[in-house]
Length: 313
Length: 270
Image 1 (cartoon, each protein chain N blue to C red):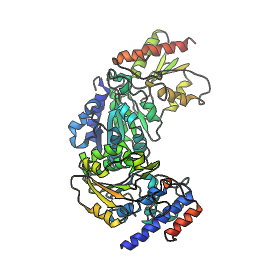
Image 2: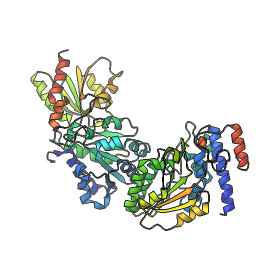
Image 3: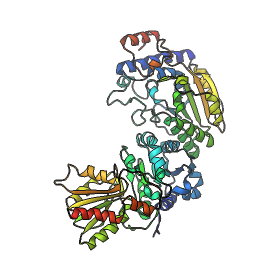
Image 4: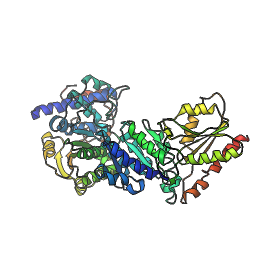
């Protein structure tokens, strides 16, 4: 049983294990191996680890080059410099040719903390989701991060894995299913549904506990895959509950909330109440992660408040 | 193959480029005509390739990083038998496998999809590094444009090529001196190009980019432990007098009169 660790440490462990199972796997990093935790792979397989220095554009193109020869490169840097700075290289060198490159970016969202807004990617899901051929995974805990790494390696084509920095407790277990494109119901409830991803899934479960005390039964669905999006599940849920709250540590534009709205508009027979708990089109800033979750209204109480608003409407 | 016949092939290929552009009324003549001999040196003389087996794993890779010169690459690939010559008539047309810029998943013989400048170079360096890791002996040849050297990515890739001692990588520069908005010097001076690549750790050569023998000679030079850079001095629009050294012929198709005149100058073969 994996202990409570940061998602990046879980990523590093998963990668080192994957190296044993699959000798085609190589790892590329951009001078952040000890922050993205690809260093764990590098120590085990020094010949299969390639540092490309502080040059993220070349990092992505080099990964595409490795994939051209049939290798399976995992490439890591911070989310902002991967999905952001090297965006067009990911689009044209990796995704356009459907290259088998796995991009696992750590330090996503405001949970980066003290480094501040310049280093907090609040738009990476959105950026990666609009690229054809791209699969987007956002694990919620260490166990799911390990499953995401395995699943990414098991399919052909580009995958973006969003990895967060903080230490997180496991909210899933070994037997929780993980199939790319299939949302996981973590808690049943007939009144409302909270659809969450990444670090917000833990907060969604806490919110459901609080709501139960208010006499409100809330489903919690974990969307570990943002693309391909599980439209069937969200449309089914929309027929079962009075309202849905999305919860994500990401901009309200282009992430989970947007994916839900895209899936529902025009595809459900009736109106449904819908609220987004997300970063409201603002840059992040310095602070302790938990302070920032409060500051940006990304806590369990914020989710509860949104559900209660709908319940009383 | 005699040099005389290579000259005939070059003329024929230039005429095919013009026909493709004339028929589609779209594409880039100047930079396609300037790198005819560079690509011929690779495809007809130097590279180990098997047109009957485009995906042969041990083939040398030829990457046209200046992807807007796709017409000359397509003309050569069809001449070598990768696909029928009649396909050239569909260049840039809907549902054609001959896209505006090279697409490895559509066109047999295209090793890497290119067109977004700098990326073909960087992918090529990545392939060369992977080849070293895998113990493969194939070579990677990348053709870049001079304006393309203004991309920061080029220098990131150059740095990594020297760092990883990629002596299986050769970068050939189509140094025609012009780009879309003017001469290189007017738009963004490139300074001492060979000096820069030399400082980055490449073995550097300078050749007449329209002389296949000279290009092949530089390609044959040993380069142990270092990547190779060959600056090929070329003329943009080479072979069609009214297009030569004209900025305006970067991305414009000829009209009927211009086309007839160009074909006439190239010896009348379409």
